[in-house]
Length: 183
Image (cartoon, rainbow, N blue to C red; front, side):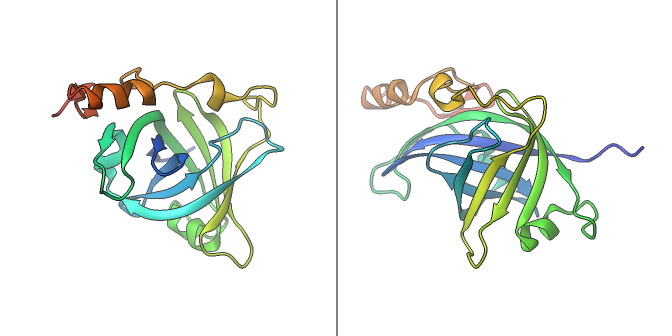
């Protein structure tokens, strides 16, 4: 059996005008991105609103830092989860997740630090931007767990949003990428 191609995913916790989680999947040479106001859930009965936002460059996947005041999305950003995913092809889509994206239903298996197992992104009927992120019914579902309340720190720097804000205020925050401070 042919091994499925794995692509990266990241979830960035972002305190801009409102706290939300930016869920990003690599496809079509970019990170397709959805803002999830309440964050992901491990309960298959919970459907989280996921609002389609602008694509980002793949290099943005591990960005942590504070976006300057006056800039779009100003505020601290941390990498809440990251890893890779296996796309579950639609019957006519082959191995291209863009086919499923265009059809409005993307099924995948996450291999992250925090999120694992089957998930689906489902576009709401008659909507362009509004989707739902739903945990699949598998052995990794955890209906009794509130993962966004339990896990508040970065998987990379181990910082909280509050620590990032304080370090930035003190002038000592450096942007963090894949284990290295870059500036």
